[in-house]
Length: 264
Image 1 (tube, rainbow, N blue to C red):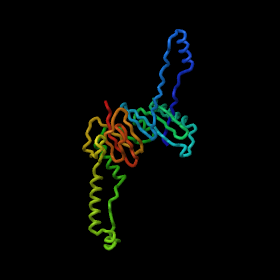
Image 2: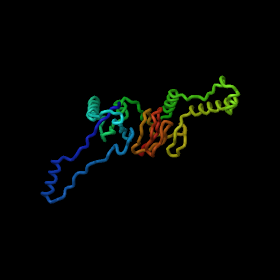
Image 3: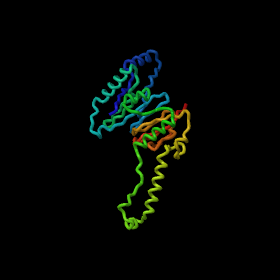
Image 4: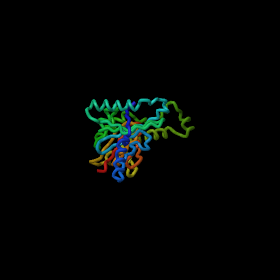
């Protein structure tokens, strides 16, 4: 299980409040109470989500239904805080920060911020990639993924099927051979080229169609939603679905490649 942590929201000190009120009464002047920031990082997010920011920081929001899994979460917040403190002390700097912790009695939602992608991977023992868009790297990942997920070729063994049986099914030997040949050719053509969905047109484009010196890319085999803070999703390969101008849903079924840009 991935490591997570808890955030305790600060509240205004009672003594300070009393002091301010007393000062206001003595001077017959109204004193405005300091504003309390109640903005939630988690908000209405209900699925594991990663937020990327242009300063390089990573915010992870994990959502787990422990009640459904019949798992006790007693002491989970303390355990998470302990893990973060231990990690930061070992690095000599505050690289991981607990932003928010929510427990509604059924689902636990935790928001953790990491200073950079290396810290995120180190803390969670993952291999998510964030870098400038690189065609050569995309090609390497594509070839590696094809090797891991080979496509099954259409093949019909006709040695055990008589022509009469084929005819009864409405086929001939020539039909089977033609079907097999056309399907194999289509599979070979599709598998030989890395394709992406273009966020602006919803059309399919190839690797050579993507050009941009400031484009960024994220690679991961995790089932997770991605949000680009201050930017836009541009392209995603077959392992992802574009869900908004700055968001995408990655399936985790293979190595997803998400191409995006920031609004500098």
